[in-house]
Length: 163
Ligand code: ADP
Image 1 (tube, rainbow, N blue to C red):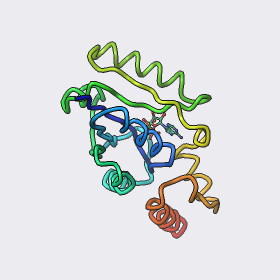
Image 2 (cartoon, protein in one colour):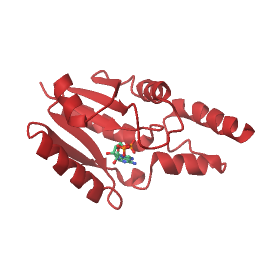
Image 3 (spheres, rainbow, N blue to C red):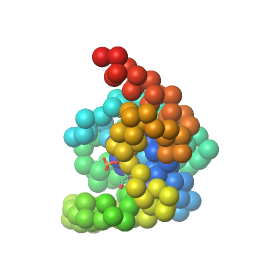
């Protein structure tokens, strides 16, 4: 049985992340989405919110589960019996960072393999940060995030404007 972990901040999940999860879930037996508990990034949504939004978006995928994690990804992978780390690769932005991370992870854990899936053409320039940025300026992001993310995103932006 091949179990994989897809780690990230997911602040919030976008359709680019969802596409990676749908495709990866067809390639492995069991996929665990690991939502980073403590991110170096200042997040818009707290851990529980990020987990819930991701979990609500993948209810149609029976072999996908969502959980929090902290610490080194390779340690978490070993703890949960995952032999594969899944990452998504956008052509222009991710190669350098992802290859450095994959090499570092392999140095620490040769038994855990990083597998990168190329982002679909329509999601190449999509990121959580860009979604938050354009949504804050009033753009319609319904094509960019799963439908369950729209309300929480709008509400959070309104809360921020009220402050
Ligand atoms: P991190 O904080 O680890 O960068 P992210 O939530 O930004 O977390 O992304 C998690 C993973 O999803 C990374 O491998 C990232 O490259 C990938 N990813 C992000 N956006 C997209 C996208 N639009 N298409 C494909 N992969 C993506």
